[in-house]
Length: 554
Image (cartoon, rainbow, N blue to C red; front, side, top):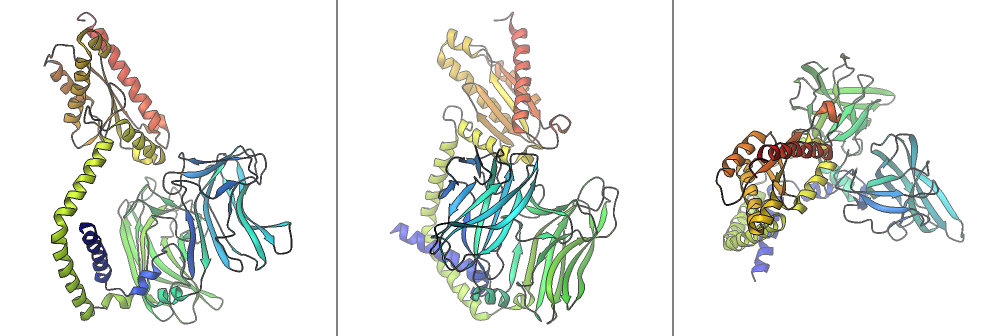
């Protein structure tokens, strides 16, 4: 009975949130696939975070595996290695997934384990009715330069007489391993979704899942970045600009209706020592009427460096306008370090008429539902609280070392994997390594209970110093690793010295070593393993110093 009531509460809570938005149902339908243009429906997506089910190496000789070193989204990508031919790559039989006779769009992110310039292609292999010989057709190709991620994208219509079909990736250098991630296949479905999205338009680009069809209006590098964001984790970063119009843009021709007033907005931020402290930015609608291009400046602002600012404006697209692009542009002045590089985030396009829709009947319905759900929530509150507390307790137990109350080795490995995938998170991180001294002497001469007691005392001292300002992991028998935002070495050594004065029948001493990211030594991008190694060295220096000082006392 409790389970059924709980499900009712959850359902009605979701319904409240939905109705309180005061947006008709078609808006929800149009926003299910925010990264897709109207008329395109997602039929398959894979981020390779759990498995690579249905993917096999073409030819069966190469090796496929999940790779945690790099990922476009999530924690893993799909890597292929040990290739003997250029055409050997990850393949996927799409016979049952993609019916013949339809148009499909294929998108993926690819990268190579090579600094050389190469080409990666996406190929469709068809077996046509009445023929046993396969037909190969190229869907898309991309020139890959170095080891960064590149986007490969193309459309393809499967022949009506195709009886079997398979997609695969190939690389021009058979000796190079490469990886794919963020695979998306969408079908062209000119259905009610297109009409609904134009009738009740509101689209937000937050760049959390990808670049969402944004591109460079002229020559520039446009990519998703986690260095800075207005909300969420990601923003769109534009750099390597060569002209004033080397700016981020998106084609919105199929997203908006002619003669309708839309409100456009975007958040913009720039930084960098070489750029001026103030810079002008503009929000622009560019469109064609016949053979003539028109540009409508919706908003212009002078931005302060390192501060997010909002550009916003309204515009009604003329009836005969075509090839419509939304641009977020900087001023035209070229500075000492070239044209300014900048970030955009939370770009929004909304039908202006939606802002003033306040129907009293919808409000009354929402109020009644809120009253009903509030009553049910009061009944279920204690049950839910108990369930949440039990779940949190289980999660805490699974992540905590039972002897010392520090986080356990498994939690430590997960955090290290995260820092390897997101090295920027190491920039302001201090790693402190602690190791109990003379543990073997304590175990051999005072008993293992005293040895355990020394380990527990060490953990208690570290946790009392750090508190909620960082994390403490027990990584081995008497080894601890601390992650904080500042150097705690002095405070930690003072606390250890005070604890050592509280004699409990055996000598108590802890070696401490700390380090952080040093740009001059580590290069442009932090490496958590390099920082850990430096902390270890500092700890062993401290250990040797303590042993020399206490050699006459032991």
